[in-house]
Image 1 (cartoon, rainbow, N blue to C red):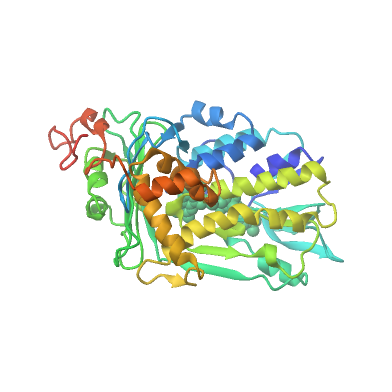
Image 2: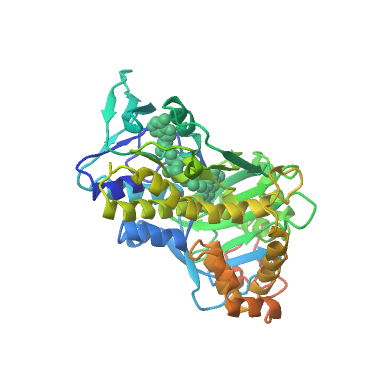
Length: 459
Ligand SMILES: Cc1cc2nc3c(=O)[nH]c(=O)nc-3n(C[C@H](O)[C@H](O)[C@H](O)COP(=O)(O)OP(=O)(O)OC[C@H]3O[C@@H](n4cnc5c(N)ncnc54)[C@H](O)[C@@H]3O)c2cc1C
């Protein structure tokens, strides 16, 4: 939809080919199973969305999403300790379900001039000749297989995209692929938030990749309609199960039990726990292809997927589309050489997310993939120290969130003031327990009497 929004300013006709039947509201759909899990949009991504769809944040908020300031709206145990909730806003995130996020975008984009949606149409392959993609072949709901001509085809088919095969069939092979797989499993469940849970912060217990044990996490994200979306995760050997009876105990078994203790106060909204194993980091280096056709680009998960605990995918997709928009401001969609230039430009945002995710994931026991690049041991030591300082030194916390939220390049961590702060360490380290005064406002535990949740120290 975002790609259609970009193209609508530069082409008379934009056709979105979509396999699913798209719901008329913020509802689930078949080909987006990841929507059952936590989907936060970092401020780096929000800014990209705003550039492409001005006013979209207000639309999300009007539909029930929350804008959560960072770090004050976040209670987070990183590998280095609880992050101090500095009152000043350093970055932010949008918190709601993925269904709501998508529906608001869809509702807006489908009204843009020239945009047409072909639902329940499956993309089968590319048509092309003489070094140029000239359109696509699709399968319509009645089984017919028409071709659509196009000056520019943008593959937004997600992690299942067959762009590599399609390119090979046109004579453009040699696409390198890289994978780092920590074997992570995601398990999610929706809860009715307890009384007093409105305005609750995001609560998140992260793993410590330096410990030689599987990494396990637990996260609560307050979403629209007074609900908490709770996602647990575990790398190979420490995976959560789909058994609802084990959900809370897993949440208590991570490095701090706060999430388990909080959800004991909430009411599950279904008997089902959704699982996802689609968590591999996989990058297709289209930008390094020996040759590239005109008229075709690939964006979003079709280029690269990342372990979802880092919440990068949507932001990187949007940032890639800003590159497309910038290029289209200078050249018409079918201009010779344009597609290749765009494909190279969007490797920038992809590369940052890739380095952040894979440099951590490769450390987990049983992780499969190429080891970190030579020379990164020193950088890893520095980043470790920076993450330590980020728990309690505001300047370093700011730089930490600037990169984490994909708002600034990793060079933000090498600014002299940040290096100095990193070397000085976490001056005002946060509390030993979760900095969660909001927990004291929560209503009583359902059917189990009142009182503050066990083990939550109010600070
Ligand atoms: C468990 C999980 C949690 C995640 N959490 C976060 C998060 O917190 N924050 C974040 O930013 N990202 C998160 N992500 C990543 C995020 O989901 C993706 O990065 C994002 O959806 C990529 O968008 P996309 O448009 O490239 O692909 P998708 O959103 O997957 O969309 C692909 C679309 O193409 C359609 N399609 C596919 N093939 C065809 C075909 N042949 N013909 C017609 N239509 C087709 C599909 O129906 C679908 O509509 C998470 C991912 C997972 C798996």
